[in-house]
Every structure is written in structure tokens, then in C-alpha cells.
Amino acid sequence: MNLSPAAPPPKNDKSAYVRDMFATIAPRYDRTNRVISAGMDEGWRKRAIALLRAPAGGSIIDLCCGTGDIVFHLLRTDPTLRVTGVDFCEPMLAQARARSVREGGGSTEFLEGDVMALPFADKTFDGATMGFAMRNVAGIDATLREVRRVLKPGARFVNLDMSKAPNPAWKACFDLYFYGIVPLIGGIVSGSRAAYTYLPNSLTHHPGAEALRDRFTDAGFTNAAFVRLMGGAVAIHYGDAS
Ligand SMILES: C[S@@+](CC[C@H](N)C(=O)[O-])C[C@H]1O[C@@H](n2cnc3c(N)ncnc32)[C@H](O)[C@@H]1O
Image (tube, rainbow, N blue to C red; front, side, top):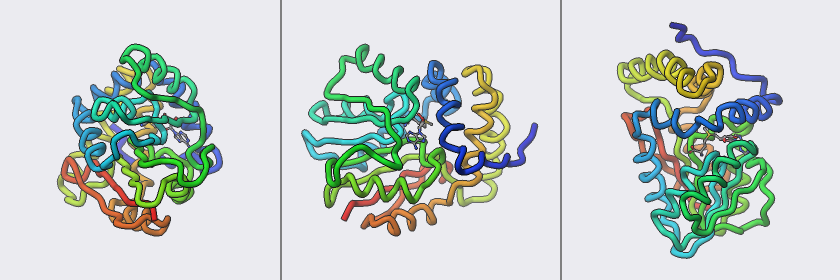
């Protein structure tokens, strides 16, 4: 079992690498997530959505929407919301659009786009969400600035992602699972061992919870804060656009 962190893909190649990887696992992405998180990812998404405080009838953008998990949770929570999902991986979006037909829709739209250069005017949205993706973007600060740009003043951005547990003993246990077991299980369920080796390793080069909160502030968010889940192995960061 190799627990040593792999080097991240070169920065300028990261977007292409990530897009190709998600294209490969798109058809089995949802099932693999449920298995490797033992179904807990659904509860984490609900916690994140509760922190959004989305206004009834509001227009929400879900960044890096993938197959639409957060989009559909948002609509189940409040069917009056209008939700736009953006992702740069077309096969993931195809899964989201198919789910939209199966799950009866609501007001959803799924668009291909890069979250570091969003195709929307300033101050368009009443809220923004992002799930399990900040580790995957090529530029965290560029993404944060771009989210803030498209939010109306006072609108909130909520980011749910894996994080680094502060307790060393718990972190060691969790790392054993995340770096050692996830590639095995993820490889079997998704059919791509490479993808589920990259995904845990993407956490290695991700900032800790406090540093990410400070980067929200640096990007112009006010009231930046975070909530730890699973003893800090998962975190929800949020901040309000100024
Ligand atoms: C781990 S998946 C998360 C999907 C979904 N948010 C969820 O909660 O299950 C990460 C997603 O981020 C997308 N992604 C990564 N970088 C992106 C970027 N710069 N612009 C748009 N999408 C991006 C990938 O295509 C992938 O669908």
C-alpha cells in the first residue's frame, strides 16, 4: 500500500488532466461517491445547503456541478430556486442533464464552462455553491475572485470539500483510508484506479481549513468562516460577497 503523496499534475496541465479524468469516470461517479463515503456525502451536502441561506425564488450557481448532486439537493430543499450548474466536463454534464429529466427538473440549467472565467455578468446570482471541487481547480484564488464577481452584494458562497483534520491521530487514521483504501475501492467501483489515486492526492496540496478561510477573505468575501465535519476531514467554508 503506497501512502506517499503523489506530485500534483503540472499547473498549466491540471485543467486538461482533471477534465479528462472526470470524463472517464462520469458514468460511475455517483455510485462510487456513495460507496467511498459510505453514503455520508449526502448529509454533508445538506449541511452545506443549509448554510447557504438561499432566498426563496433566488438564482443560484453551482460551480463544478459535475453530475448535479448539489443542484438537485438545492431544488429538493426549495423548489422555487433557479439553479445553474457549470462544469467544464461535458460527460459529467450529460449525466446531470439525464438526471434532470429523471428527477422531474425544477428550474435547472447545465452549462459547459470554466469556473475561473464564468460567462456571466457581475452581480448576477443570489448565492453560489461548490462541492468537492476546490481541490480540482487549477487556481483557487482565481476561482474565488470569479465567484465573488458574479454574486450580488451580500450573497453567500458555500464550499464543501475534503480538508485536513487537525487531530494528528485522527488524520493518520483518515489518511490510511483516504490514500490507501479509496484508490482500491474507487478503482473497483469506477473502473479507474488512476482517477481514485489522483483524487485523494489532490488533498495533499490543498490548503488547510484556516488558510482557505483566509483566502476567501483575500478574495473579497466578508464573514469568511468554516465548519468542520468528520473531525475536520471534511469542511464547509463560506463567505458573503461584498
Ligand atoms: C469531484 S467532482 C464534484 C462534482 C459535484 N460538485 C459533486 O458534489 O459531486 C469535481 C468537478 O469539478 C469539475 N471542474 C474542475 N475544475 C473545473 C473548472 N476549472 N471549471 C469547471 N469545472 C471544473 C470537474 O469537471 C468535475 O466535474
